[in-house]
Length: 59
Image 1 (cartoon, helix red, strand yellow):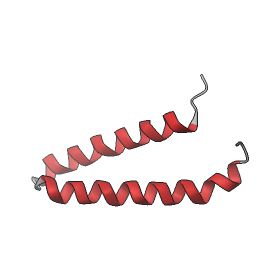
Image 2 (image 1 turned 120 degrees about the vertical axis):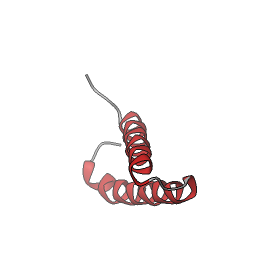
Image 3 (image 1 turned 180 degrees about the horizontal axis):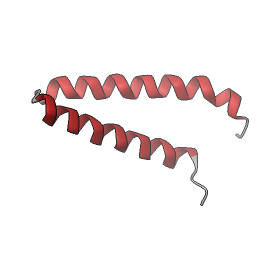
């Protein structure tokens, strides 16, 4: 089954959010701290995707 890049990105974001929710429960941190961590991970993910995209060749 072929999954396009948008779907892959959405799946990755969901996996990150679930992972962060698990970390929040384990660490018993408040939501603001976890939200900031998620935002940082999303920014990093976007930066990585922007860096990789020219090398993928597709679009």
